[in-house]
Amino acid sequence: MLKNTGKAGSIYLILIPLTLLALVLAMNLPQSCETSLQLPSLSEQELKTFRDFIASSAKDPLSFLAEAVFVHQLVFLGEYSDYQTIGFTQNVSLLTEAVGMLYEKGLRLIALEGLYASDQPKIDSFMQAAQFSESGLKEILSTPAGIWAYGEYSRLIRQIWEHNHSLSSGQQPYRLVGLGQKLDLADITSAADAQDFAKLKKACGGLTPEEYILGIIEKEIIPFNVKALLYLRFEYCLKDIVYREWALFYEKMGLSYDGSPVKILSAKMPGRIYVIFQHNLWVQDDNRSYCYPLEGRLDAVLESLAPHEQRFGFAIKGSPFASLVLNKVFAAKDGKDVTPERICDGYLVNGPLYKYRLASLPPATIDSQNFDSLKKLFGLTPEMEKTITYDELVNKLNAKIAEINKNMASLRR
Figure 1: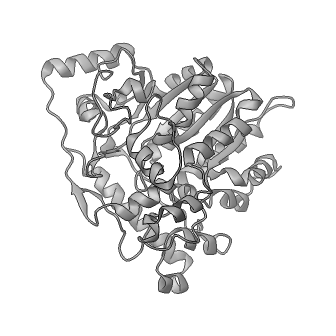
Figure 2: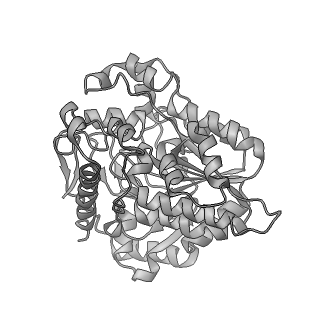
């Protein structure tokens, strides 16, 4: 069974951390929502149609991503995620593998939501240092999303740093930019606080995460006029819809919401932006239960392919997936049907979902350097906050990761 639970054991583990919306969703999810995911049964003709399309039009994922970077100024790489489904090895490692190839295609800036934008001076100092600093890496990755997928993000950032330090004099290095919004959680200490919209508004500084990220893009990325890849969760990459659930939520906070940074920037930069979704679990709007992406059709097809055929990228337009109606997952404020073409331009598949895994945290991920700040993020009970040790916190996080990995493996039929 794949579980989508609102609490992890006796503490709020990895619930508060990711975004303002993740905080509220975590506090309001059913305490035990179990969903047995079912793949659709496709006819032989449907399977043939999908397989023929993949064979004729799909490309290997690295080449697909590289082509998108070569043609466009800003490429948004979106990963559908809630607090339990961000940072899968398969998705982050693809970008790690692509660092050198993307540089050859002209990419010069990589922006990550897993790094705080407010830490940009620290990020710049870390990247420019003559020696790789594990403590410097830990300092910039001790964020909610960063610590959750520390193993994978640390490998990605090390790869970017090593690439920069392998360049010849005069070659422009990558710039690494943080996009994450640091929330002020001082007043958010309970489920009741997560229902107080005045406190939530204060926590995000009176800005929606979308407004905040858009401001960072317009300050730290666009003025440099370089090719950039931005790795974000899906809601900040939605191409052509105002997401109804978010709009209703922000309205209660007294905040305006006109769509994702991609939607707003696309009007200002026509033809220069490309949005790619990475394969991942989705969550249905009606009951917050997990579901397969693209109505499960893609995963049903993946089962019929050989292992070496299961990783690829493709353009949504003209694909057999383009006309699917996704209203159960992406309800738009305008009430019109949401098809894949309204949310992204391309799609990357790194294998069937039952193979997806989160990487365990290295033993020294949490220590005296970041322990006190991280305890605040993980919503520990007051008693546990006083008594828990470094190793216990890492072990609890790894136990949650192991549970998720077991649930992912159970998706194989």
